[in-house]
Image (cartoon, rainbow, N blue to C red; front, side, top):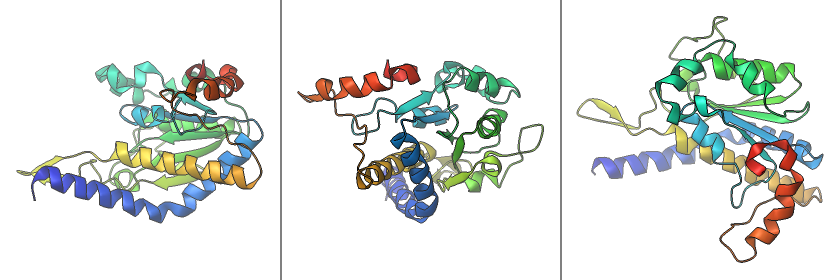
Length: 242
């Protein structure tokens, strides 16, 4: 079996193991269903490549319209070394959250594979102080191997209300070739978690008699007509729906 085949097999097995996270995914979905059922919005954020996971839920065909992706470009993968520096800067996260329309009782999902940098740690702390339900999507294997970079010594999973463990390995590599760790897993594992959670939210809302705000592909004939009123409903809650 070559490296490509090994990677795909390892990734498939890792996604299958997410079934063990049924309980925290269910808890997060119930919190979200309650919030969205009362007109609330899901806020999701990440820095570095974790921002790609957060953006996956924004204006997504088959996904929820009630989503605000808190995606500071300076913290994204396109920022390069600047983003890596800012992610480790204490005091930066409160400004990011201040610029976002987060209301008490809503849910803030923070994606961070390691959970050790000041930005995700402070987002969790600030979120809870603002009355948000904070859900962490993180790797406990990685978090348990390294020390926190936050001055207080906290890590993301220690501050979140709900912790969903992606099971990504420490170092985020699936296999070795010539003694070198390769094949990151955290992005697809994080995305699988968020889509599983969103699917369960739709199911819970339907069982409660609510029409879930689900977007249709813009590339289907009726897609734009279906989506327009849904996007208009949340237009004032985040730039991704404008």
